[in-house]
Image (cartoon, rainbow, N blue to C red):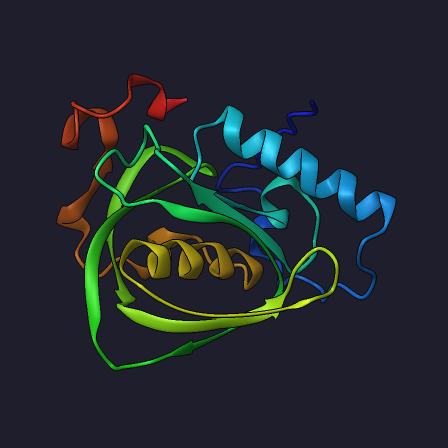
Length: 178
């Protein structure tokens, strides 16, 4: 098990646009994906993008059965998504509170598309195409933003809905501030 350091907001590597993945199912890619899942699980994350651990590739992972940081969220299947493309399936947007492992201790209300299709490939280079909504759609959009060098605070419209998790949501996991 290798838990990698998660870069924090302010690190310029989080602001880069990630490079496409061109080699799949290699020992290095398998090790990277294993490390990403180990890192995400150790931090109780809902997802993780390769740029968050300093790897400038279009690779995100996400999914959980239950998550301490989002106790009300429905299950999201564990997924490896490489070179993703998102297509909104409607113009409907919904505000929802998000946190980020690269922005520890804070939450903010972010508008996201309610329904979308994501396409890309898995770790073996096999095509993935899913239509999703709700929290699943929110997680995918959040993670893919990392590949574009965007952290969620840049998407916040109303900064009265942005603050410390421990103040705004004291009932949540006390380790969310880590």
